[in-house]
Length: 227
Image (tube, rainbow, N blue to C red; front, side, top):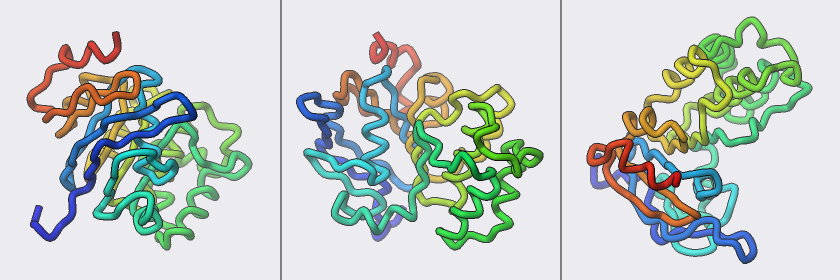
């Protein structure tokens, strides 16, 4: 990384509350471009809140966040098209086919239509690409949502439990597609995600309890986050 190239993430004392409930607090870290941040914690620990802030879908209530060199939320408009976000909601139109959904997003981002078919084939949806999304199983919807997040080849990929609902073969296909580039990955698969990470953030009850290089940690070091 050159000195002129901004970090992918610069977070300082980042926090967010929902009314009286603190959902996230005290998150401070940096992430170089081309690196992977793995976020661990039990359900309700703040993982999804963090990813939604980074995706410009939520405003932080304290601290500061710079994503791809831009300050959030003030400059969120400048990074939205450079981010790929896979959350718990697939963000697909259920009455449209997978192909129609992806072509719609391709037009929004100025992406060649040929990429739509390539991605659908890569996740094993080629034969069902022209069926309405509402006829899909949960795993098929997840695969289509992964294609949507990857379609415009984002500079930063935000993945909230990307292999949720997938069988082993589909999980492997998704992992192969999402392995490269700069990533923030929330996962309950401690061993698998740790092996692919450069930096680890451990959350417990909304608080940042651990920020460390992945190479310094073993899966056992993260078990306390789930106690």
